[in-house]
Length: 211
Image 1 (tube, rainbow, N blue to C red):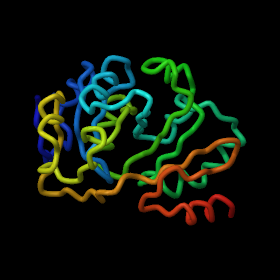
Image 2 (cartoon, helix red, strand yellow):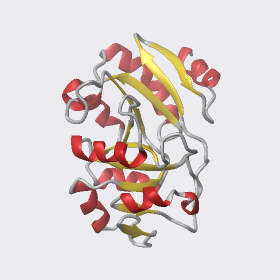
Image 3 (cartoon, rainbow, N blue to C red):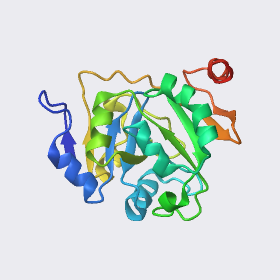
Image 4 (tube, rainbow, N blue to C red):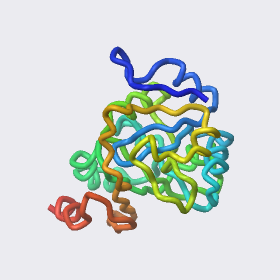
């Protein structure tokens, strides 16, 4: 397993990117909690579930590096995408996950049963560089054994997660993670529904959506 600290010249070094591109699973900090992620491919995604001891019916989300990538991941009308764009512009990068109707040409690469997909852009330079250099998309979930608490400090990361992952990326001197998972909203038929409350209040999102 690779362990990589922050580097002054480049936050993410090339050997970590090679691990991901070769199908490896990597633990890394986001702006909320430590996540565990891999490329959107069947075997790496299955490995994430195995490491976490997670039921496959519980879906993971896509972290992306740029809003332009959305068109390849979602199946939605131009009208509805224009409608949600105000919210994405305000809260991305940030602690908001939006669940869209999935583009099955994308999700069938790793999960033939996946009808919707949660997406967000994290507000963390280290995470963004990792995602961008890996191709712009990483499928992720919190780096903890299923049923246990998510962690915001590398010292709290379960040793089983560390040992079974292919690499752990961390910045021990600058762990500015909030410790609270992102707010999750579902976007369906042009309407927003709250699924999980995080630091971004749903009432605030609704006001910006309706204005």
